[in-house]
Image (cartoon, rainbow over all chains, first blue to last red; front, side):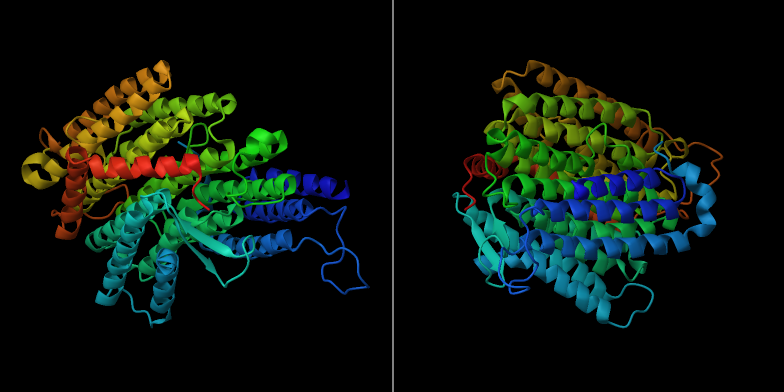
Length: 106
Length: 489
């Protein structure tokens, strides 16, 4: 339940920011959206039935499903790269910010 | 055979990395050009060999690192994937030849970026794992973000493109998470028919289908495409048209055919989207005033045709969609290369400033005419065979309204192609045009041979695929049969 609420909060804030004007807000929005979705993927491994990440930590018990963690690790790397690219675009395109209006679907 | 499956993914990545390691000087050199054309052609050969081997219904597999199934990154070549890799690599090579003519390869990063992109495309076509599909699509998209930013509108030109595609990727990843949560697997082999058993899984896969519909530019999620493709250079537009939306459609076809197995309870929605896409795309194309804008709006319409084949949800429909996809990608590439030639020669592609090119450039006019007839679907071009297949499949499925839409949209397509012909090739040039104010570059007054030859070659392909359609028909039918029967294990 807690993760569901956190995912909802992150995705809602992210969506709101992505819809704002100005690329910086969009970038931050995508960071939040990415966090939300990553949490959702982690939850897909089943947080209720999840044990520790590694076997042997604090005794036995069930191990967490490693596959969603691998998914999220990959997704984090991709999101990081794209965020850096977007920030680069932001810096390069700052002089052209007045063009924002021309960017809409015509 | 299994090592050959790795070639389309690994070879371009390795060569791109090696090219990036070299000391860069501005301008393209012979090594860049040789690698840019040679590597995709090698991949074409590999894909052709694999295709010949898979037509009988067998598949070729390779998995990296020797991990057990489910953990390993597996690449499986079936006929659909081989057709897709063959097509996209051939178009990659063609677009890089054109880039030499349009001087876009002055950008030293162009060839490595394009090679990474083609590796991502091949991976996305060959993988059977939904999460790896996400990763490969990202590998394809990240270079395309850079290519758009390097385009003629500068860093700001690609914002819409990057934002929309990033959002679609995020939604797709959420879909992957939901699928794993509901079914416990992301392997398409294990997910066969899952949507019919479990409504929750159907919704989860539906989220992914929506994301793929954005990437395919299906109406109402299409409005990013015409603007973004107008923001890049002419040769990169050829590349994007051949690769990006095609991967979206092929992935959508695969997920739909495997997980939903053409469920009739959902198929009507897909058909409705398809017909809407056809109609909206062609109507917005007719209203445009420049060559590239007409052509890019037409892409949306043609995506509708492809989705009709997918939405019919029969083996005949899938086969028609695959045939249509291959021939349409060739035809559209030919038209965009002609548009690139016009832009290089005249410095603009605005219809109001063009005219009379038919007399000055007869070969270019022939290439345009053949490709345009192919897009409309006039015999003996490949477009006729493709539309006949699609119409037959629609009639076979009893969808008469779809059949009517296919014919009606073709008529409007003819109108828009006539508009281009009249604006660019017929008549005479309008007087007193102030040259090149739209930032497309200066007029050079001639068409480079490296642009003219690909245009003619691609147009010739459209004719050959129309007159001698049998091999491709056989291949697409075999591919569709594999998709339906699921011999991918």
